[in-house]
Image 1 (cartoon, rainbow, N blue to C red):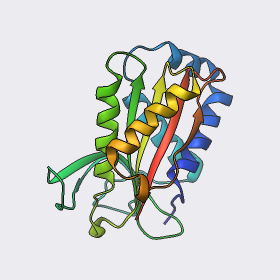
Image 2: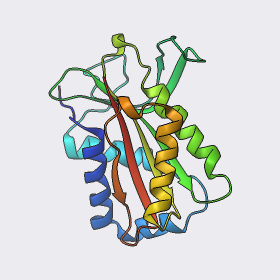
Image 3: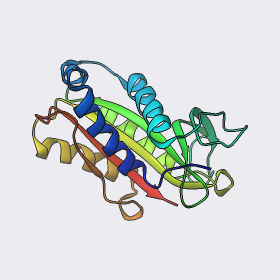
Image 4: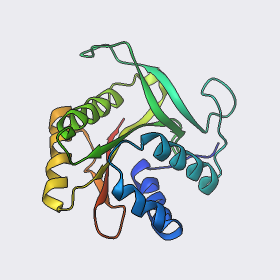
Amino acid sequence: MAGIESVAEEFGKFVRHLRETRPKDVEHIAKLSNGFEGWLKLEFFFWLGTSRGLEPSTFEKGEREIGLEYKVRLDKRGTDRDEKQCDLWVSSEPRKGFHYVELKALFANANQNKVLGSAADDFWYMSKIPTWYEPVSGNAIVVGVGFAEDAAWKQAIKYVTEKAGLSHDMEPPSGGPVDGEGRVRYSVLTKRY
């Protein structure tokens, strides 16, 4: 079964691919004023399938290499819900199991704290997946538009990690600019199981 080792590493490759092959699309992202999570989810899904040779499937059938929109039951200790739908799941290599991923599009505007809080919640939920789902990692990919200064973006990601309460239990956030001017940035937050 094919898979990936790191969501952060693969998303970084995906961003480089977008910059190199579709710079106009990346420029358009910087001009948006509302969400593009659905587009991003599909683009990353198809890129992973093509670049890594992963076969799309439902989680219940087949080799289970990559899929979209899957509900996982959560470890009930300390959670306020029984299940959470993740945006994407992908098999792990070399370790057997799966990476679970949530994507959030964030805009530097008056609504940003609400979306930052939602990203923190999503990341926290991705850290509560029980062992029978064979989790290797739980991830939140946060893509921000309009954070032209490094300090503003770092503060936003710090807010997410602190609100999620996983800073001691996670890998250091990885990320960078999506466009050449830093108007669009991303960070991948990862909790390893």
